[in-house]
Image (cartoon, rainbow, N blue to C red; front, side, top):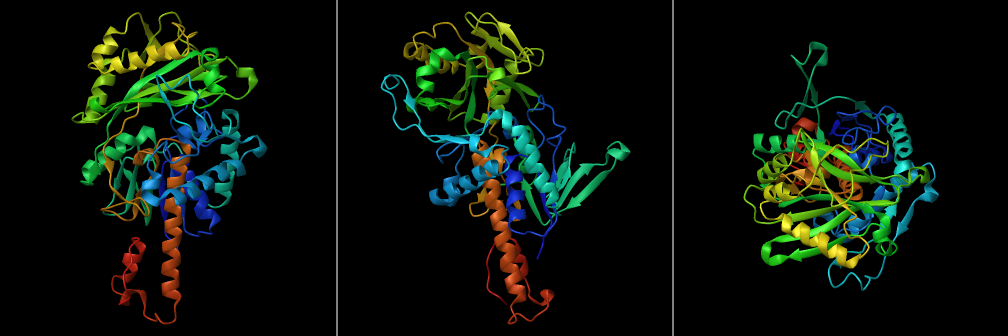
Length: 472
């Protein structure tokens, strides 16, 4: 039995899902729809869309621990989660032009100089290399095309009807005045950061059961690498953290970029925010470090709306803000000034954060104690935001919606944060699709089941939905 699988988004999650399906000999039609371009035509400035999504234009670090980037082990257990991680990492090696360049760092001990002020989360990280991601993308894309995957590029899905199993896209031939309907048997919804608002709309439209998520907002911090070198020598992708449990607040540094580090601009919900990336080629070396200082706040009523309102208050002329005691805004890897308005005071930012910016102030002040050469030689881009809209509830086995068992949410749409976790989620869904198809095929091919499919009552339908039932 070969079903039509439609995937929304050509990011890391769905690319790994499609790869797993092809590797297992899946003969059904696979269609991937994305707003961006294929890896041959995708521009460096197109950070949020296109083949491999934001992960394909990132700093090329693959986190190798289940405590970072999502809750995969909650769904499948620790052992299975790590097995899925291995499949994702092996795919990056498989399509890497120089796989021997992929290395794993695995720091073991927390240095004493950190302990009085911060906790330091240590975990293994595979380093792919930013400069290799484009070539990896091309090799990977060619494999999928040769395997029969159909890609619809520069195509924005306007709606999905979960009840009718249809994906709806505007017919550009008629200037969007009519629609094209694409039917599916299985849908994998992996829209990434740029489509989180779409996922929220669908959740509201179909009244999907959801669980609320906390506020996650902060700044992108940038400074010369020399100030942090003694920590980088211990942990290249260091993660400092601290908790104020009585206040419902925690902070962490994340997504550390070194050597040739540049601040990148993102657009989500039309809002201007910041992230970071890094080049591996020595020609781009600027000896800078950047990382996010992300603050998680529990107990905010309507956290999604609260975050949107905060971001709106720090937007000026559709751009974010930059503050530094001494520095000027930096440039991107292409030598273009990072889009930000420099301000001389943090007062308006502190006001927008409604008192919560105090925790970020404390974090930076304590970094100045731990790294005494840092002083005022730093700057922050505001805001860095992780919009976490209420997350639809899913069945743990295959990440399908509890109301629609043939619709699977993966990646950022399911609060995954990072390449490895997103890819693992997509791989898990593909494994379950294959497993269900094999179960149905075995059932239909069993001589003992000599009835026509329409005589089997609802048995066939239940198996396709990922459930089990006895034969009638």
